Image 1 (cartoon, rainbow, N blue to C red):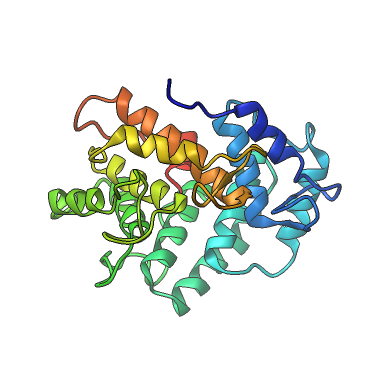
Image 2: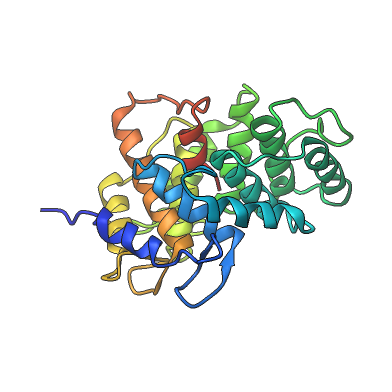
Length: 278
């Protein structure tokens, strides 16, 4: 019988990383970070827990409010902070968010920056960005990894645009799967759980599947350790980020099996968008 994920042990692993200050840290002894807090909240949602609120988890709401009050860091960290606040019902200053997005695109025109800016504008501000640089053509970098492809495809899907060369992209993503079932950064590279998540997200957005769905699941499940959390690989130490990639990957695999061949994920649903977040 195939090994199953122990959800109880996973949530115990997550809760042991909750701090008295309200956020979550990478280990029980390290301080809280925005990234770990986002991943802890996201894991709980995927496992069916109700979203935390300022009333149900006041310490978490206070932690998020403190993080909102300090200068924001890179756009990827800002995305995770704002998304966590949005999920938890913590109020945001829309004008400050908008100004931050304008400043970001003024200094960074990468695919990743555009992806995060676009998602914040659409999902947090609930508006179409009309500031300089927001309407530029979206292109994949010449040298790309699975994460780049997944971000590119998400924006295309969000904007209702067709994908040129979709078949070639699906084939490329399928070739990033290795003999151990996991995915590399690009074909021929070592399998890590974050690449499994990005590869599966990209394939799902194309209505495609990995070459070997069962071995993909087996690789991800094998990354859960005896402590409940997931490692980057079957022999790695567990952390919240790898645990998030693991549980999100398994949900993507479940949805692939449930959808008809060629079916695309529905991203109007917040949980579906969260699972596809790369």
